[in-house]
Length: 208
Image (tube, rainbow, N blue to C red; front, side):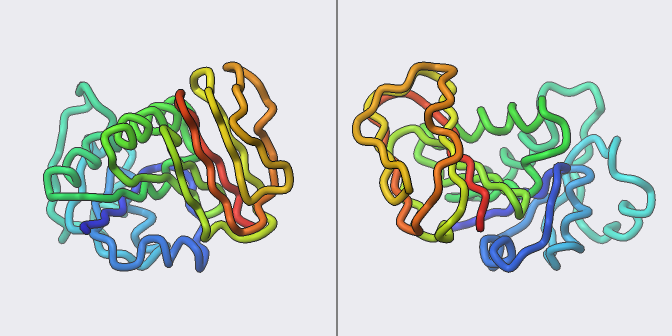
């Protein structure tokens, strides 16, 4: 199994949990996401992007890292390019570090990208260190979510047969219309499992 941490330009707060999640992963940075390498004490094997948001000091500090430079006028975000490079290198799981916060259009686009990757069988999630996002396309087990963590399921389609176990307010085979806030702000008891018969959603976790 080849796990990659993709360093993106969103928010990152260092924590013991985040350090554990990226331990041993190969690292690819996307543009200003390289700044998180120092925060998390990570060594990147590749740096990609158009470098419009990586300042001169950052570029000088990581001048030793191999780069693939793209024009500003391109057809993909720097984050998508980094993910594509990871897949080319045989990635079987991905952690998008800094994929939350920052620009909402990028965060949303990368969330939808995670749903597409999950539908293809890729293990992937995004984290800021304080907030985590997991794509839900069928069943997902998250036993490592600490007891007392806030958990929300946000549908991006109508959800059919949604079951949520290991929370204060469980659901069993519930149909949830698009736009419903029914599944926001639940509380994990440390044995979180979510299953879905049909539809797509994002599972947002705020670790206690």
